[in-house]
Amino acid sequence: MSTAKIDKRFFESTRGRIVTLLRKGSFTVNDLAKELELTDNAVRAHLLALERDGLVQQQGTVKGFRKPHYIYGLSESARDLFPRPYGILFNRLLSSLKEALSRAAFVKRLRDVGSSIGAENSSNGNSTQEDRIENALTVIESLGGSAQAIKENGHTIIQSSGCPFAEAVEEHPEVCKVTESMLSEIIDAEVEEICDRTASPKCRFLVK
Image (cartoon, one colour):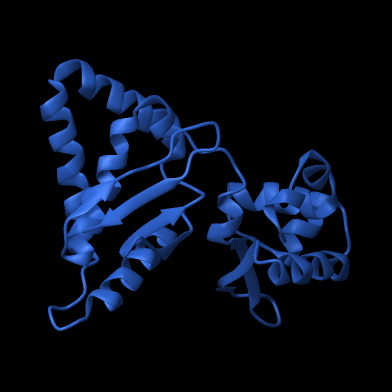
C-alpha cells in the first residue's frame, strides 16, 4: 500500500483501526476480534490484506486451548506511518551545537559524522570506483534518499531529487557536509558538494 493512500479515512476504517491497535502491542486474532467486535474470520481477512500491503506481520505464536495462536504486530513500514520526533530533535540538536561551536568546529563535527557513516559502509579495497559509487547510491537509499550517478562534462555527479536530510538542510545547509564526507569515505575519492538549494532543492555531489 502506498503511503499516499494512508490518510485519516484509512485510520477510520477497520484496517486502520487494526493498525492503530497493533501500534500499542502485539495481538492474536481473538484479541483483535474482541476489541473490534468482529468475527475471527473477518479479522483474518483484514490481516491478510494488511500483510499483503506490508503493514502487518506475524511475530510468533502463543499456546491456545486446541492449537497455537499467531501473534500479529506492525511491520517497520507501518511504524513509519506515525509521526516520529526525529526531525525536530535533530534540528534542535544542530541548533544547540551551532550556538556552542564556531562554524568551522560545527562543520568539522558534521564531517566526522559523515566519515563515520561512510567508514561503516565502505567496500573492500579491491573494488573498482564504479563499484564504490554503486555502493554509495545504495547507502543513500538506505538513509531515505534516491540517488543516481550521471556523467557531466567528463565528471561523475551523484544527484538525488530527494534529500534524506531535507528537513534539517532547510534550516542548516551545512548538513550537506555529512553526505559529502560520507560519499568521500565510501568512494575513496574527493567529493565536492554542489547542491541546488533553489525553490526545488536537489542533492548534487561532484566526484573529483
